[in-house]
Image 1 (cartoon, helix red, strand yellow):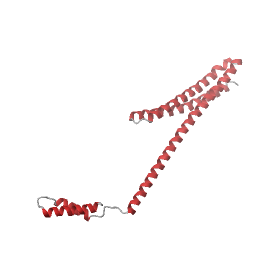
Image 2: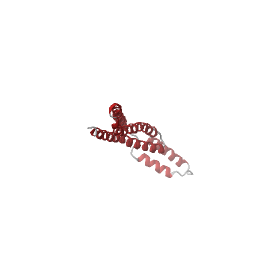
Image 3: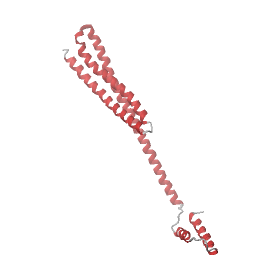
Image 4: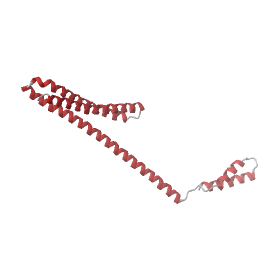
Length: 189
């Protein structure tokens, strides 16, 4: 039974009660039900229902697409960050190993020049340390972000900022170490 049919049936029932008994004050209810019956039909046509279903399906698909896009963007950001950490570790670690090998060779012939190259090695080692701490901070950042409490999300954001600063500083230490090594090699001539 539709809403309109129910209202019409209820209206008729109340009118019959009012005719038979004067003790029930139901004029307001009768006026309301007459307005419901006289109003536009409340039932939707099958075409209107299908139109609403189609609109709802479009909104569901748009939400799915937005979610998939955001998820893929998040994966890309994570992968890019991991690549940046690996690159910084490889650069600073490789430079440290190469410089250590060179310093090892200097111990055989020119020990006096070792402190000049040791200074450059220090910057590469600090760069390795900074990027290793960055990797740990990245883990902590994601761990805190996964929580629902607001203070944990703020802590995750702080760890994220620290990770970014340490990662960038690792690249800076690499450049600084390269400059020191370059100046040390210039003094070799």
